[in-house]
Amino acid sequence: MKTLPDIIHPFWGKIFDSRGNGYSSPVGFSHAFFGEKTHSVYLGHHDISHTPNYIKAHPDEYYKPIAPILGEDYCLLDEFAATYTHFLSNIDAHIRQLQDGVYAIFTTHLKPQLPDIYETYPIIETREQHDEHISHLADIRLLPGGYIDMIFYYDLIPAPVFNVTFRDGVMLDPLGYREDLQANE
Image 1 (cartoon, rainbow, N blue to C red):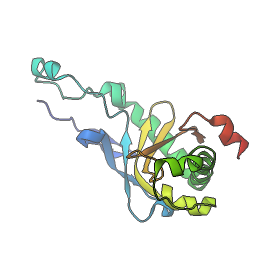
Image 2 (image 1 turned 90 degrees about the vertical axis):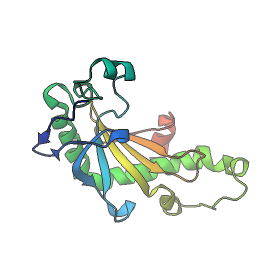
Image 3 (image 1 turned 60 degrees about the vertical axis):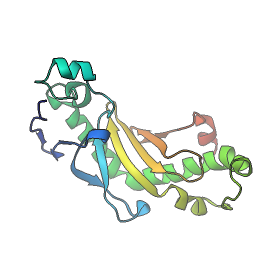
């Protein structure tokens, strides 16, 4: 099987394949809200790959098609860099959107169901109390079209991770309740 070609970008540096999570680079993400850890920033869709039969029939090709993920001639790397730098330039506003938006979902949809889901659960009366439950970031993924997915561990739902998407600086509602988010903003 062919190895990943050297892909070096002015912003991202040397691109590497993290296998299960897709392409990444040395550029990481950190913010005090999520603790001191630097989190991986993944580039493009991670779940695109050739089938085992295709790989067997084309041993000279890399196991993942690069163009659908990073663009022809890696053009999506420029788009991802623009999206990411714009996101970082307003990071405190985005963190506030995350806090307010997920808290609105919690109070409207999750909090009333907690007694039915868990035997014991925390008593949360304020957004600040809720913030500790969304401060465990797993990673960030940049996608074409100005999308940024923030994936984090949210212990108030019965799922391994919770996904919040931003597009062009606006948090899209992860549960489809956009009108509720706007009413609570």
